[in-house]
Image 1 (cartoon, helix red, strand yellow):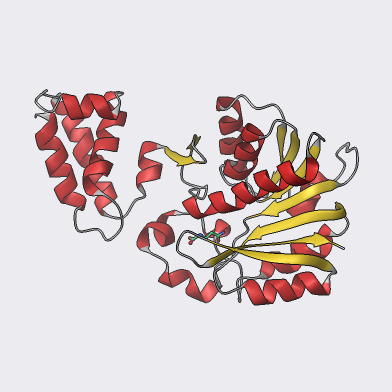
Image 2: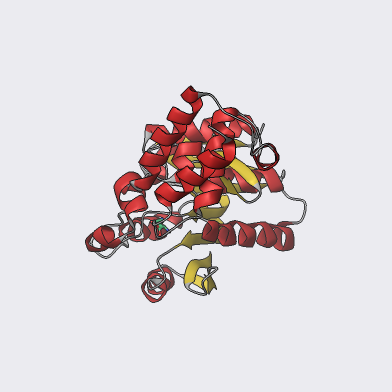
Length: 287
Ligand code: GLN
């Protein structure tokens, strides 16, 4: 079948899904199957592909039509201008999370000039946050912790692909993951994008997320705040004075998290909005 026909059939199959861009997604799948880039696809519309490729393509598009995330199909997601490998078992990096990374990059430039900056990330997923910070600022030393094996494997793969040697990943339950490590001192920054969806809201997430992304990376317990409740008090023992604690959070969780941070003595608390104008990031410094 000709590339153009195949793309049209693929796009039609997923055309009524609420989220996504059918033609672009069909193109991305074919790119991967043919191991070519977009430009090739666009300029070779009349080319015929083998029956084997056409069958594979249709099978994949059927899966996509059932809501399977396109990023797991093509095995990657772009974040901060870098390609991150993703697969089932890790959260797909969200564009909104770039706001968190950009804030940290600016904060380090303003605050820390040429010093070495020690950062701890709790819950790494694909490693997108730690690795993009480390890519854009070579003065950092980052430790990332995750409870689960798949995120650690995927993050290691991404670290190798990006050739970064200033990040190390460890398995463990939050701060336990760095127990026993040789450290020069405390951290300048602790960052986390923890699970923050209230358990009762899990059923309302869009199918792509609910059915296929890891529940452990999303479900934050009864009110969604379980991880903030654990991390905020403990972070006092790991941050330098004036150190930065920064989280991604749910759009309506700012007030409660701010209260938790103030109760633990954090100051200069600020909230950042996401691409839709919703509260998405909260930060403060240890007083
Ligand atoms: N932003 C994600 C979502 O909407 C949630 C990520 C998280 O719980 N940390 O699915």
